[in-house]
Amino acid sequence: MKKSHWRFVAVLAIVVFAAVSTASASAAVWHVGGAELKGTDALTLTAPIVEKIKIESIGLAEECSSEQMELKGASITTGAGGKIEHLVFNGCKSNVSQCPLSSTKIETKPLTVTASLGKKSPEDTLLLKPTTGTVFAVYFYEGENCPLASEQVLKGTIKVILPKGQEEHAEMEFNPLSEGSELQGNSASVSLRGKAKVKLTSGLAWSFH
Image (cartoon, rainbow, N blue to C red; front, top):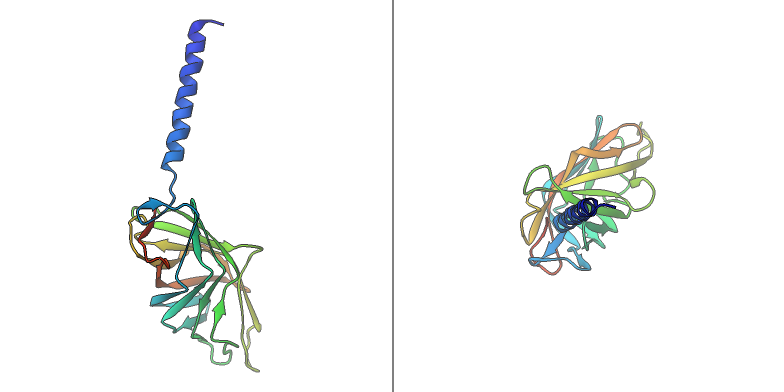
């Protein structure tokens, strides 16, 4: 084989290696306290709500009046991962008077969290999906004259925006989106809206970039 061919192969190998190295180096990851996260870091159990949580569908809405959202067993992990054992909304009430909720608490199933860079800096996006299966949350209606099915099953995923996720902040705004979310109720699509402020238990500044 000619030397020129070997030179070409060697140069090609160097270019490919450099491209792979650059891609690996530029992959977005969680940072805590100014350093890349190695391992896990827990989120606080409660997060103050700055805009009421609403679960809405066609002609139907559950509004949750509590000033706190619960994040049971929530953490971020090395790379772009994370988990929430249960996301809990309290003080919830149906807008259909004949169909009161059986409980003022709406609690999700265990969720897996995957972070990615947002459409524009400094946004980040979190994808929240059921860890197993497709059921996101289940809650129930009461009332003898309620025209709705007693069991409301939400299936699918939601997307959450961290508006300043690429910047180091001790407190991050947690803003569920209807755009890009794929949450389905018993017979129609469902949106989850509202805003909360989320922190790490360590109190350190964190980011994803």
